[in-house]
Length: 550
Image 1 (cartoon, helix red, strand yellow):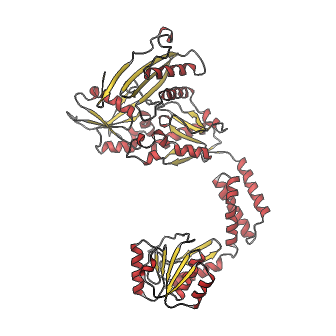
Image 2: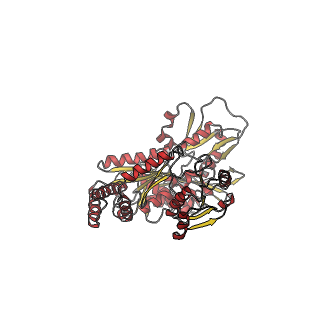
Image 3: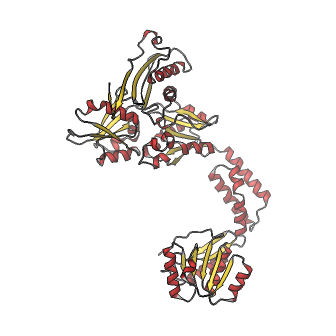
């Protein structure tokens, strides 16, 4: 059996050595040299062990027959006496109480092996043959002691003392690694002598070389297949615009990716998908983070902003069902979705889609492929996904022939604010933001800004059903929205002539839509749009027992 080597900090930890012979002395000396608080229990003791207690305040010698219970409260136990029965009892006690134990000459009773050690300062080499041959381990230790330069420990300690300084001066990890390799080589060449003047000069050289190199842009994204695919759309656009710039993906799992058995509103809302990336932006670990715009919370962390967006993809929602023959009759239709916005709209469409069958929405979390897997397992009769995500993952070709896709128009199901848009988040005022702005789509940015303004004016997050969709049609702006609060649901439509620059028309339309979704007139109703209709009359109905009645 091969044993995995693991180095443990013993500083201040309570350790027990049972035995008073030469093996016990050798192991006790090693343990105390690494800072252990040592209790040695034996009825017969070598003079060397007694002297160890005299010179080491961390060592206590107890002259009496050892018992298995001496291991109580210990963090590590070494059995090194001649009493095999005592060793067996002590090892059983340690196993029961989950205390690491080493039994000399008996690896079956041991839960860890005591390695042969070669040490210089903080440089430690552990050697084991899995308990098969102490002679081979001793031979290897002697060979290593002869080969390792005597200055190595001192040199390693000096390099360790430079880490904070180098990290501050050389932010790029690879360049830091290169610098330490050069410093180590210089120390070896000088037999461990590494003067401060030489260290300062080499750090300055590496710092200057890093400034001259082309900049590497680090872009944060979630680990899911969809997030990576979407981020690569952004990266490829940036590469085309800035071919001399290097780009690196930094993939992380967020709280929202890890907790899949609860609705988002139960543990933090949309922010659970972005908080790790916002912290990384503020710490300077990444330059940008790419998000599905609909997942962004209304308030970004202070010092951050949306610095660019890609051209908008398909805004529609898609009802996905299995491609199987036969229909369900007279049964409840279970639709998987974690979105309150989708829930209220698919339930309202239920009579049209499934005549004489009740529609019930059940919580569905996870990435796109996970949700499709749950559909295939029969946990749902259908699930609702964003068309843009399905297209970016090329699901039709990845899983051909498995599903039927029913695309719901924005009139049938009003999208979420920002749906279909990829947003690039960055630090305010950072010069690198020009890279994101160079590939940003102005029309998508306008629409996202207007839709987020509607959501902000409504004061909603993911705790209330809300949708907002803005588009330009000729010289007019068209905005639709749906919102439910306190059991009252409204669906509204606004038209606005695009007569002014600077986003004033978008803002006016967004404010009018928000007012009407809140059930109030904005003061401009019936006057604007130069005689054009301002949209349909208020549609309001009360929700009872999960169903709406006009």
